[in-house]
Image (cartoon, rainbow, N blue to C red):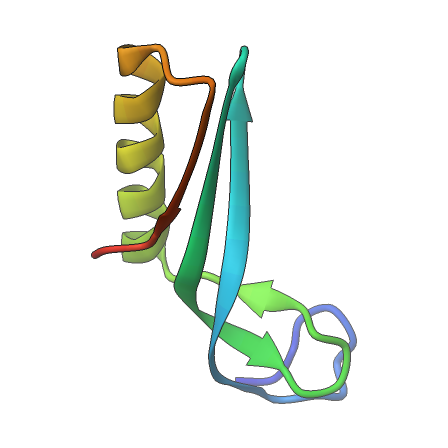
Length: 74
C-alpha cells in the first residue's frame, strides 16, 4: 500500500517494537508484525495485531506488572 504519511513510499512486511504505557505499567513488545514504509519508516499495525497487543498489555496491567518486555505472540 502507499504510505498515508509521506505519500511517496510503499509499505513492505517487517517487524517493529511497540511500547504501551498505562498508569505505572510499561509493556514493550518486540517482533510485532507491521507494514513499514520504504521511504519514511512509518509503521502500520493491522487491527487484529493491535487488538492482541492491547489484550496482552491489559493482562499485565491487571497483574500489577511495572515493566514487561516480550516478543509478540498472536
